[in-house]
Image (cartoon, rainbow over all chains, first blue to last red; front, side, top):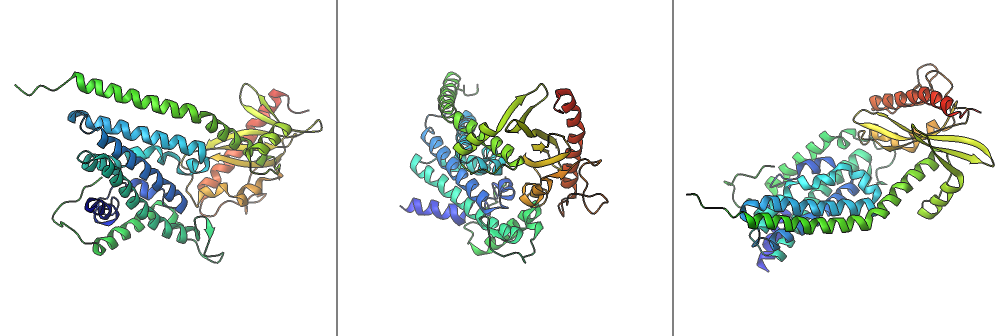
Length: 206
Length: 202
């Protein structure tokens, strides 16, 4: 039980993949101009991280140490392809909106990071949970950024107009620089907001 | 002497794992391939119906039925195009349209009247323009400007306020707007040659 709480806290804020570990930045900049895209991207990442962590952990005692990276990549890519096929078949408009970013989930450092840092040393179920929570932490940050970008840039939330016709749209927010500003603000705000367990430890860069 | 690494086991492990995943993926691919093809077909059909301004309800069966009733697919050597016929008279042709946008290629469909002087409609199937700026070529407000557009001028598409202008460009997306007009204008030149060759003027 304690372990579950610890993993939960780590994924959501203590060790949040985006604003603490600064991982998965590329996709958080790219898809956050609309809330719906961010949500689907987040769910996709939760799926891939959870299942690949689970599988890596399941095979951890059988996997020869020196080929583990190769094995992890294979496992991750398989789940990404499954996700890609699923989106193409059942959510074609989403697949079109996310474009190449679905395939690029494989390069998201969060997944491999969790496989190496957690799944390699822990039991399958808790690894699955860790992957899931890390995905949730990522999704939460994406949605937070997308909320402001979509609201200010399009005047809408989930495609529904909120601010009305008179709202002057902030084009900057929709463009890539808007994502940089938002992400910077998020990292800055959360830096002071959540306690640091070990300030001396250098952060992992992606 | 350095510690000897295992050789056979890792190789065998990797082969087995790869085989297992390949099998799973092949199975999933096989079971979704038909749905994916149907989805892509549906998107194409909707796009063609849209360029001819044929009203349709958004479900697969009706779109399929309408498409098969109203349109005829013609495969020529150069491209596949679609003929819209009503009671034996041709009401228009739809052709695929591709060209370079600002960030990547733009592709879509364009419909023309049988005399090739009027644009009936345009639709973009894929593009990689900036969302919110050039990406607005997807919006109805922009695409609807090409409905029943007289394209007999030279060049056929000119942005207002230039003299003879017939279409409004998108504010803040000058380069994308220019790409679209270049694509359409080039297309109009080429299609007339193509129509001569195919004997579509009659």
